[in-house]
Image (tube, rainbow, N blue to C red):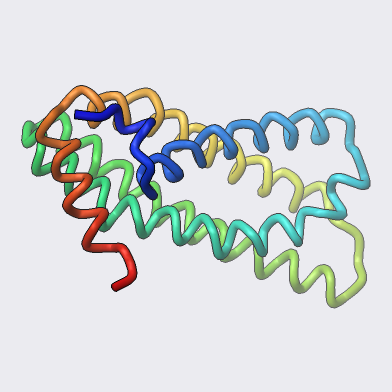
Length: 163
């Protein structure tokens, strides 16, 4: 059976999105340290993108990847990990919504980005990085090592494909 990182499916794309998140976080942290004004001007656009794409990413994990993980490797540790990751999805979604709303309000008021808001964004970005790393180091390797999980991923992924 194939390696999940080489399946020509949405599962592969989802697994690669974690690297994109980590790369963006590195860029954010560098710009944060340097207080790069041009980078911060693009934050509202980035959050608009995140609002759409991150939520789609989370839904796919929750409907395909998490169930395949729990069903394929049904042990206490794995179930606890998946429940924790799903809880993080909810927390990250709430933070994202609040930050997106604040950035939109800031943009319409034509006020400058405050240090307080930059700190909130940094906390969100750090939490997102930590979450992505956990999925990359714990969840995806476990899925890849389990023939049953890989088979379930293919079945669940097909159910998500447009008819």
